[in-house]
Image (cartoon, rainbow, N blue to C red; front, side, top):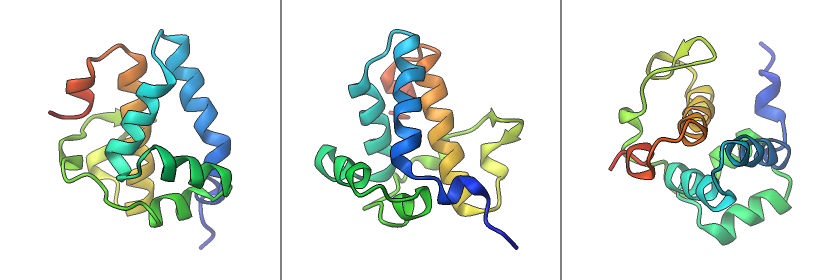
Length: 116
């Protein structure tokens, strides 16, 4: 079975779209980075390295230092799917990130987005 196209999309091409979505709603690039780092365990430097290396999304998540242990608290729908019910683990990680960026764009406080 062929991989979904999103798996082979460079993270560097999706990243600016996350920033754009957040900035349109008055949020900052630093907040987007905070959310991505919280989910993946990257720090600012290693996140930038992933972008500079033009790694695809599959590699981006495969090389993530530590997926946050609070991901079970990420619930709800994104693109018509309940994120907690997505069976493909990579797709679920992608949708978790989408959901977190959506919450950021919708103006949720960072403590709630980061499940504190």
